[in-house]
Image 1 (tube, one colour):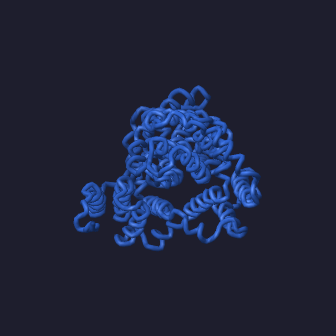
Image 2 (image 1 turned 90 degrees about the vertical axis):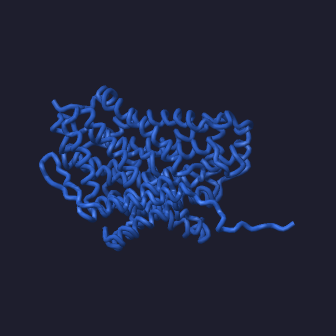
Length: 490
């Protein structure tokens, strides 16, 4: 019997891929080469011109969004395309377009991923996973809930990127006890997508979960002239963050109900495996000390003036250096870094800065908010929350806040809207980008599980985002007023 090799020329053509590949290119061409667009005009009458470079930024934005959603090429390569198009079409010089691929924020993600690698290599992940399973038991619904609650709680004291990198290997261990092969399952999709979504929900509760909170409070203080304290933010955000966490648990139980209700014998198996690991090793103790020391310093630095000058990116990168100094990791480990994810965030930073520096993002924000400047106050507040929700899926949530919040706070007094409700509604949606992987690092880290596609993430992110907007509406209309937040100016 002879074996035949398949002729590459006879392989099936992927017409769907070609369609969306061309769709991105056509959108880019239409926007980039179209005639000049009208100016945006803010409430004070100031004009904002959309330059050719800004129009080019919007064109790149549309192409990247299309290619990311439908994954026509690897997501990291789409990111490289973002930088290349900026340079070839003279939107921004190469010194800016490509430098953004290694910003401090991207290095923070790199260091977070390395922490996840250390948890896995040293065995700390297995210890944590076995302990958690021994507590939550054999019901898959309880495993969902336990993982989500731990993820949300950790984001109160550390950056959600670091939390996702820490939880990822733990979830991989838990999943390996559910399924023995790499084939995606409903439980796998729900477990990893849920971790990403819940990391966002938990991160809004304190200023330690992400940088967006501190940036927003800074703008608020400059424009309104009042400081929002750490505990005031937590007071208003706690019920919303935790309500969304439990809602998401129900969401994933509906859309990704596990194939198995229970994993028989899981609790006993977890206890035996935990016992078999024995005492903590030297590398486990050393790794835990390095990791939690860095997390502790990052968490308390804003309360200690002497430490406040230290940059969080440098602090977390110290952990990476020490892992190699103490030979916990070696060069082979460095070669396993998921560069597809690193490039993804490099591209996200590049398009974010491109939209910001060319003025395209500001033009979008002013045009959007101008539509609602004469609307009911509730519609105006929700329009701001929705705009930031969309923008934060494509660009850094810090940038989305920086673009939208100042304009919204200027418009708000004309509609008799108190600035506090604008600030908190914006922060809620900025923290939960459920549509695209580039919206937040936990999304991309979860994608590394290979349990879901970018299209699936986008598809299920739509109902999740609708639920989020409903919760924001309930908070604005009922929850926050009952808690004492001023909604309208007296």
